[in-house]
Amino acid sequence: MHLNLKTYNAIISTKLREEVDWFLKKYNLHHFSYQRFYDDGRHLSLFNNLEWSDFYLESLNENSIAFIENATGLDPTTLNLRLWPTDLKDNVINALHQYDIWNGVSLYQKFYEGVETWEFAGSKEDLSLSNFYLTKQHLLKQFIAYLKPRIETLIYPKNITPIKASNTSHLENYHPSQPIWIETQPTLTCIGLRGCVDLSIQETKCVLELKRDWQQNKSLPT
Image: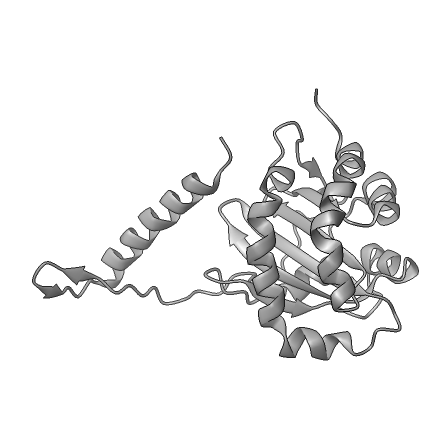
């Protein structure tokens, strides 16, 4: 049976909260989301807050320009942390503020069709969270590494199709002020049978591309 994303969020809510609520309570957080944004404007969004989930998926369903601008200059080889924007510049930011989902952070990871996002947030009163995110970001990254295999079946559902944001057409000609991904110099330590082998930049890129493709194929659900 094929489910819509709103219904799917309701079905998995209990399981998702079982996995994340202990961590949220420990660090005075209230909101968690996992979102996968595709280059073609589609997204798959999962939230621990059903009230927000219902509103976002049913009444809003937009990509936020403020969040896009906030997620520029990312390193495609690692998990990137960005504090949430605070200026009420678009409908998504305004709605989060109205729902008291605030003082948040996003951690971005590139995948082969777009960007994967893990988000945590508190309330408007939780002013100390920004300092927590910046000084304890290793805890967030450790939690994500722990959580991802535990909810793999939830974030890679077989009976759910990512949905297209309602403002996708309006963003077709939009270009962020900076590139989303920065160019990084590829590096590779290669040991040969008779000692170290020095690879050219092009050779290094080819080996890393093969490695990336192998890792992506390995991580995809079957």
